[in-house]
Image (cartoon, rainbow, N blue to C red; front, side, top):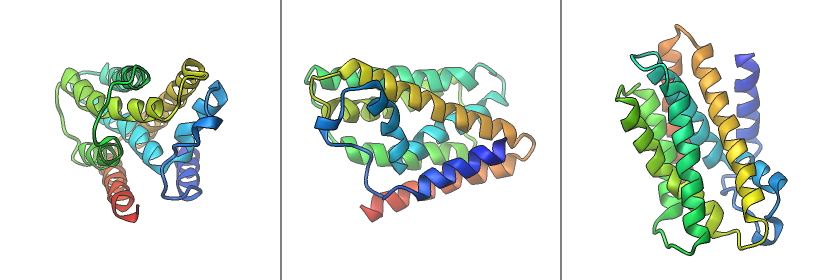
Length: 194
């Protein structure tokens, strides 16, 4: 099953252009649009799967709760960033920080950085605010919350794919870290391809 998830993620990643997933605001506003949104941008796919992978690696340490607390922190703060954007609160450097999140979270998984779960939650939460702000900043008023629920659900599923991938690698600790390094390399590619 883990191989199938991995192949599906590779298929999704190779089937998208290096452009970001952010759609025409006129096409936003529904749960379906929100759900599909993270699935059509390599930046989103890589970052979300990396969060799950790092959470799985953290859970191998002393706090097994990291496997769900770290992804939950991402989703929660992403929704806060979305709300801030909907309220008109400006946030500089949104797109560069989103790309940086792919590199940074990939590197966190690559080095299997072991930090307290609360610190990991804060680290991914920082990046999540920017991901959420990007979604809300381009949306407009129509259908904002159905869209938000959709992209939060898809984000959670991408996190779960990363967790399952990390758990599925089991004792192949080096393989999990290699996937993190490849994610970081993908982020660098995004940074220089765009």
